Image (tube, rainbow, N blue to C red; front, side, top):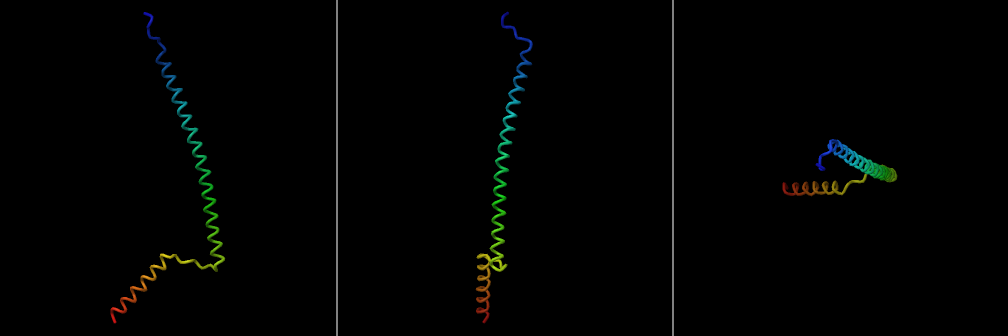
Length: 93
């Protein structure tokens, strides 16, 4: 007789679940906002460094007379084509 269930225990359990879920959601939101702020700062620094690097490239191209430097891989391709051409010309002779 002393262990009778109270009529409002279901509502109290639901209210507690809502409070816990709300606190969890608020924590997740706060963490996401904090990480988003850090990511924005990092992307801003990266963008600034990228712009500075591109500006340095532009300045070095201006100082070198506007000529673009050839890539080593492009030079290697040209050398391979020249050696093939010389092999074919000597083989046909």
